[in-house]
Amino acid sequence: MKRLIKLFILCGITICFLTGCADVAENSMEDNSLRESSIPADEVRVEDTGTMEEGYYVIEGILREIGKEDLILETAQGQNIHFRLAPETVIYAGKGSNAIPEGDNVKVVFDGERNGTTEMKEVFVIAVTVLEEE
Image (cartoon, rainbow, N blue to C red; front, side, top):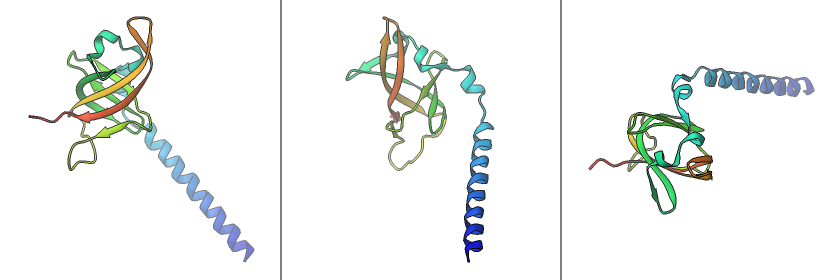
């Protein structure tokens, strides 16, 4: 009986190890070409961020890529900006949707500490919403 329990535990640990390795391999195979060519949000100049609404910075653009921890937004000027998402970031995909498809127009609401007068540091995304077409 003890051998059976040990075998069961050993099989469980092996399965956990193999699925964890598969997850790491899957994440490393993602296409990083967009991420490498994009500008981190920490390096965005305050003048380039667009407008302010209710004390937060707002920028609109086309969603190029979204993942569990980050998103890449293409601005009207053609710049790709890389934002890191926090677990508490609100993502609104619209009525009846549970995901934002890449290529949709979105609005990103974010904040951060100003580093001098033009640059920001420690940028955090508050919300990502799909812009409703009129």
